[in-house]
Image 1 (tube, rainbow, N blue to C red):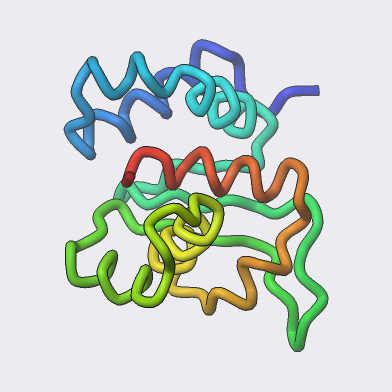
Image 2 (image 1 turned 90 degrees about the horizontal axis):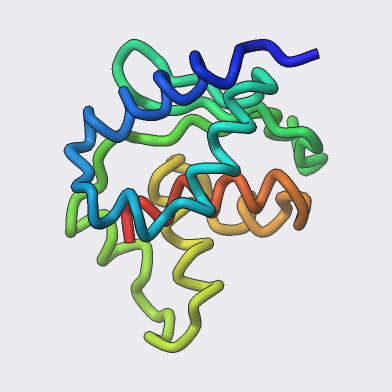
Length: 133
């Protein structure tokens, strides 16, 4: 059973895109990411918060220390934050850069992000990060 209708999920997602001022060109080029995220909203695993941050409830939390069961993504990422998070990562290391963006967006250490389940949790987190690349 879905937590939200597709129509409501699309509205929530578009509200988030609007808050980020994402242009039509970028929306079109990220249709696959949009489908992943709208489905997560429908399932109740992704929430667009009042402050336009996103909270992703992990299907498989990390087991390290106290564990992480959800990730909250910032709505904005500064150039300085991006630069700090990608320092030392080669330009051709796409996955390394994606992991570092997710870490910067969630204020989590890279090691925590690397412990995400490689299926849906990582796919959803990566889909969010694509709007910041």
